[in-house]
Length: 329
Figure 1 (cartoon, rainbow, N blue to C red):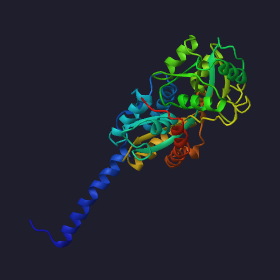
Figure 2: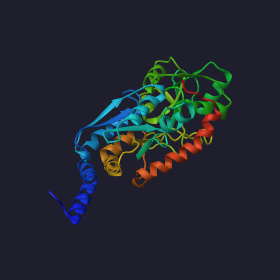
Figure 3: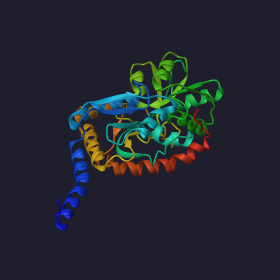
Figure 4: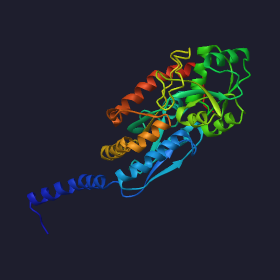
């Protein structure tokens, strides 16, 4: 069978268009099966709680179940690495935070580039750090805590969620700012460290508000100050570090979603909308506020805003973190 030149060109043009139209149709249909969120910390950790809360609400916007998978180890770098190696088809995304996506880049020799190997989806919330101690510590406020630490150099212990985590960095900053010295005890995530703080096995923690506030409210541990510029709506009785006499000891512990590099813009846009809608849900906002989370405004929840914010945070904190000489294990 012979084709005229015009018939041949028409067939060639339609054939060339098929992959694009097929890809467009596939993106339009996404998602057609469950989506997995990789959480780089243990079940019960603040980031895990946030992922499960949002994942349940995202189900409605995406029309598919959202499954949470915990991949722990190396201060969250193993879970983030799992996302970096995943297929860029939108069915595996990762939730991370200041620790996993800023601190780890300055403290670990990672097998991926935190700024180049992921597609930003959107900022979620900030969760200020709170300085807390076991109830047996004799100090009643931050100045008394500092005085107690100075009179007992290298005797107190601070629990952290792991080497190089935000709690570890905050502890190093605290020691430098106050002229105190204490031991840092890394755990495999915040929950076991908090258990030991409640039971009196360690003396101090500087951890996320969402993690410590339930124990503070229950009277199991004592809170001294919030490492932020303003008080928490969820705990207005806890002073800021500025009010307590240690100005500028601010650690913004933010969280966000990323996808593997190469994920299409259409898929990123669908995921971003689903996350934004979940964060706008009144019941979600109420639960986040009770946990001490402060959600970012909607115009800061975009992929573009996260990309710019992530870059700025990296440029701000890497020199500071490296100056503390914290190294990942």
